[in-house]
Image 1 (cartoon, rainbow, N blue to C red):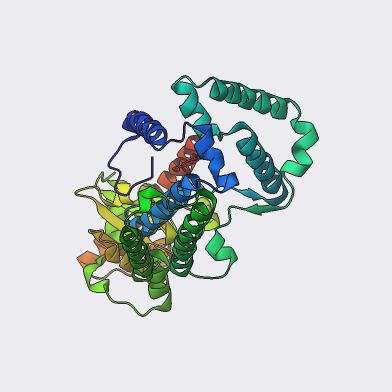
Image 2 (cartoon, one colour; image 1 turned 30 degrees about the vertical axis):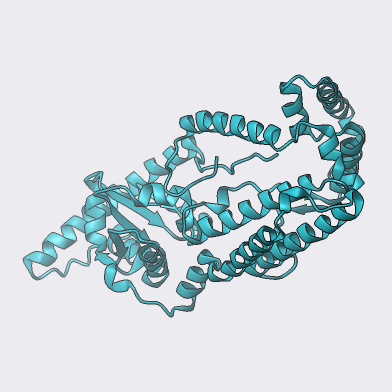
Length: 398
């Protein structure tokens, strides 16, 4: 299941929902004729391009859905698994897959679908798939060098081409529409007549218009994450009026009092955070604020979300970004962690207090300069024993 923000389906329910989606997927495959090898291999012989249309349509629908949900902040793109690219093994695997498809008449998914309704040839195909997996696993040391060669990492096509995702989505839809029309005429030439499913032809024109309009709408859904990050990094933003301030003394008091209603978000580098991190703090980056984990914590009711960095300005960027993303009860540490260190952690009583307020303040800070470092030391040990507990990418695919 997709990593939706906010999380509307829990991890346990995910398995139940996935089961029913899988059943529905198999049912649709069978109803579309994908359990028939003659229909599937029609792609290679030119008399039936249903496979091309279905896969292109599925890909475009998923692409538009991911872009739209990501733009509106409803999908945590960072948790969507991108299969790593190993160029030569991908080409070799694609050749073997295509050869098996045209000879056997099935792909792995459709073979299981056909086997489920009793097709003997599909059962043999599935058995052959298991045999192939076993042979590959046993012979992996022989194939490892080829398998891992030319590693490109978790690449995305539009990034490799140096264009925006909106432009790539638009062009891909146009390619799909062009392929639909081209294959329709190929089918007519091979079969001697138009596919009856596309009569009257005006239905095809209507579907083409809908696809082109959907493609144009992609330009109205730019990468929201990049847009907001550019805004806060440029300094040309407003929204600080919605951010409250918290003094180092108040934060120190709440930490010492073990206040259950505070959450500290530390926007320094991981190295600095590991060196010194306040109790109840979590290490975040600006990019993390777009993710599922941030939504889970920042959406909690009756919590004071305190943003800190070395200085007030860097934490202010994160605070403004959080406000732009719709989070509330955002507090900014006055003077940043640099001032907190000076006033609390490394405080030295100057001994020149005149007013009662100054005497009380110095007395509190003297106590805090002893208690807070001890709490920091205890918290650091807890972090080491707990280890990292971050959400993992969703792994899956056809």
